[in-house]
Length: 287
Image (cartoon, rainbow, N blue to C red; front, side, top):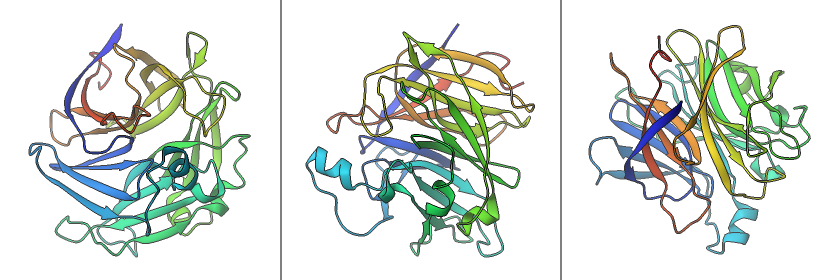
């Protein structure tokens, strides 16, 4: 069994790394950029950008990679005492000291984004994590917890879910509970988490990619990608490969009675636009 996907359209960024869908709005971050990008699901001409970090990144790919904040995860945060309408949280990968930051973008009451963003220092969250090579690639909210997704590599093949109390995490001080997973491999290359979302039944739907790299910084050829389900007991219950080896970095559902799953990709090449794909899950996965 393999999972079929088809490309909805190309995006204006090349390294899409996180996706949130809110009504007709698609919110996308790129791991080599400083902006949050807002698109429309039905109007391909619509795009707005909201700056997350000041300054400019160099055009040279090697220099850009060294300086980028490496935003790899984007999550919809529900309403909090100091965040009455919720917001979007962009998270750095944590793979270097300059990648241990987050940016919180509040929503206004009418659902538009507030341009007065909040910078979060994630050092106190990331530094104690028990990983030899930290690489946070996805995130989701489960009940009152912020769950970060550690992606493994050839050297350290285990992936993990990292659970923080949400309110404490937004203040930058929270103790983590870590649950490790050994996912399947493709041609000897381990799959590692790239994003996740919680289903209506409480199970976790995750995406994973098999990138041929020995560490969290260097890129490698993507040997394949997969989707899977972790049940409410924390066990790997389902998994299946994508029919094509698209490097899926972010997933999100539309709302409504017949939700659709979309994904964004990163080709690790600034000349190749990121793709927005519709994903067709196997029958029974959402039951």
